[in-house]
Length: 627
Image (cartoon, rainbow, N blue to C red; front, side, top):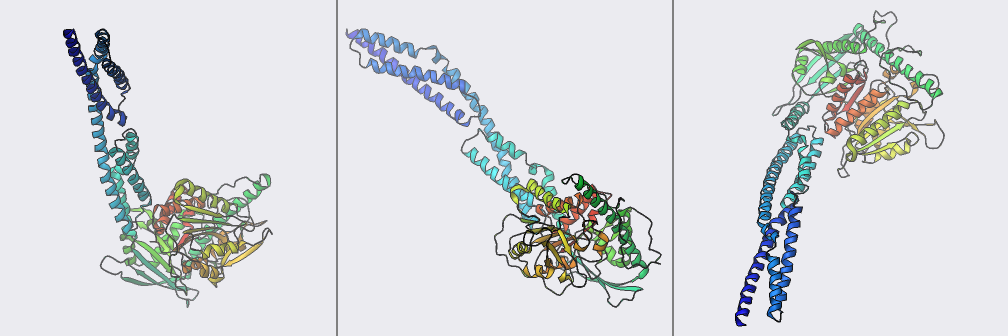
């Protein structure tokens, strides 16, 4: 009996040791499998299932071992020993080593993947740092980096998210996050090169030269005397110098230029008349039908009144052969440039990339359209306003209002005003809607926009809008009236308070100057109210040109606006709306407003080569201002 008991105890001890070995084996496999399960990089469902089977065998073995401790006779003990031995000798234990080997191989693969992740993640902090450094340098020279800044914020957030997931061992979504990062063009060598190129261009254009063209008030009818002064842009460590010259413009030349302007405006008038009659005809048939844009200079039905620009009837230039409008502009620009700009001024402008501000008391001539021949290609004409940022600075009796910001910086805030009390400017309404839709599509949550519709565009509403330092951009599309003798008596034509349709309210330039608060960028696409479309007649560009709009633009500049865009002639069509869209897109990208104008001109000229919409706009203010 004693011998049997000793044999039982020996077998029991051996099985206890085997059970402990199996438990250690399961724990070892568990340690191997846990990081694989947590990372979810590699599928281990089969291994988990096999481990669960082994764990079930182990649990049963432990239960049998516990039962053996309470048996009362050797026969029962023998039966329990056999059960325990069967559990510990199950064939599935023999495959445990293969399971461990499989898990080790998968761990090695996982480690390789993690190492690759670490390498991929490791390059991004350097890329983000390089982008941040480039942006900081670009800010100092007012380069257009708003999209790059948005990209930097996005990358910074994503890199932090990726690094946090990696540190916490959450590898499951890491591949997707890294793939999103890899889509960024920042990794391309051309990305930082493009920022550097933008910086170089901005460094050129942040320098500003000033051109004064002052017409003597004592001129006779036969000769006009001008003082021309070019103050060169300041260089680091030095000041600009003054290049001074005088110009005598004979009546013959000035009349020729006025005739060219007349031909241009008559061509525009024909297009406006055609638009008007088409719009009126379609409105009678289908009130909601859209009116297509008409190319400048395209002849069509509708009578055009004679435009009087003080050209004598017997002048040899009273009739100029028909030409393409762009060719007319080239001829006019080339003659103005040659006559007004001395050789020294021409050399400086040709060789020196910089912004240019023009101040003049002769408002009827389109100074921005002066042009010169490319020395490298004599067949190429370069218009000043297409080659460099250009703005006008009004001549007046006031200093621009000093500005102290009272609001926190935030998203650019746009105010779009459609003012049409007579209801006869359908293109103006479409223009405002087009700008709104484009801003929403391209800039989404990066801008705030408010539209003031036709009936809402009242004096009371504009009083409130101008007195509040709320809007970064004010776009006005509608009617205006101009007074060439007293700019303060020019103004905007608004909808009068009340429900009476077509009732008008005058909003004077003087009031604008005194009420305006803040430093908005203003865009006026406003036509002369006295000569706009009515029941029987289309608006006309020629009469518009006789009443310069500078008084209205000056009101905004002297009121504190950083810039005001006005038009030389009224344009309400698809290219005009597209011009404003491109201009605002450039401004929001971070271009200086003069450069934003230049790029918008070039884009519209490229898109509409047979039209001269690109030449219709004038920027007043500081061309180097950045929103």
